[in-house]
Image 1 (cartoon, rainbow, N blue to C red):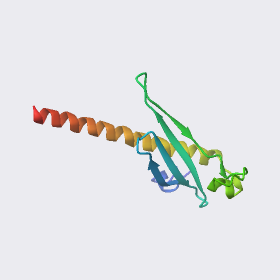
Image 2 (cartoon, rainbow, N blue to C red):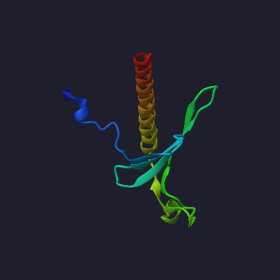
Image 3 (tube, rainbow, N blue to C red):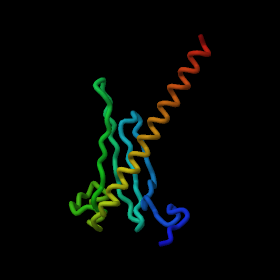
Image 4 (tube, rainbow, N blue to C red):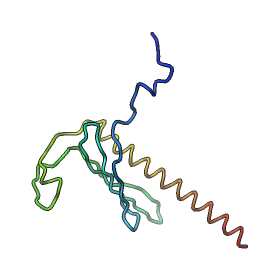
Length: 123
């Protein structure tokens, strides 16, 4: 058996991408437009819950492209059902959300470090 020198060159770990991510003004929700490898776009929403008892996040994922409900007030509802997502496409929404939440933590740590540095400089 011959193995490639760099397996990452032959294997795509994630086949979708975040086309757009918008975070609400209060920072509690982030709506992601996830583009699938076939070009369809689905939505996922991260909901952050902060409390003195501890913080957590909930993720609402799409399991289908389109919607069969036909609600006239909803863009997704008016397009009809286009198909079901694979388990991998659903899981990738979690991967993208995890990356966004990890970036949030890194930004919080950076802000805390900057705040600590500013406090030491001022005193």
